Image (tube, rainbow, N blue to C red; front, side, top):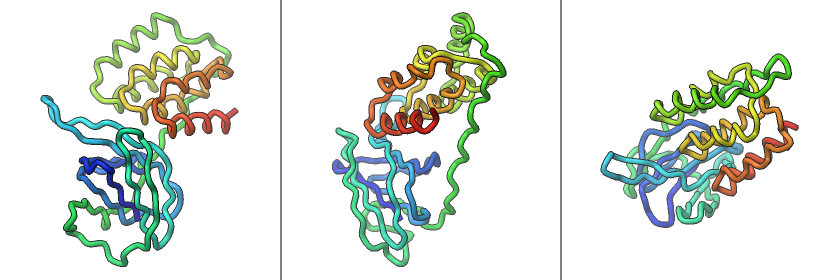
Length: 220
């Protein structure tokens, strides 16, 4: 069981293992997570003239213990989290008095991860500047990071890229989570992997930088 709040009591939204939960509230509780480590992302929800927008305030892995509730209190200013564990209640209330949104009856089903990029069949050169420019125009027409990344992956299938080109493409994406996903996906088709760690500068959160570094180390 996982309960997430912030120390500033602001509305938040959750993503666990790539599954974004639809509701937002000042406190969110998920009661059906299997024991083990889970990738948790917390977004602050704010309103502007165009509607609601979300900003990533926490990105990291939390460990869920059987029979316990993991309490995660996020500091939206620093991106850090105070994590503790208490005995889990035997029954999850369906209506909370303290503003929680409860997901106790929702079956846990993380979103399937994208398959790895298809490496080029030979040592072909990286895509040209003209191809990059055409792809940039196509991506700019897409509204969401999901649509943008889908277009980028489709265009790069079977091709090669340089670290610098990946860095440019990361700048086309709005959210840290999708930038990390794309950077990991593109690693296998990058021709100069010895420079790939330089893309660390494209991420803001310490936890994302650590995940990125761990991915590179584990795939050398």
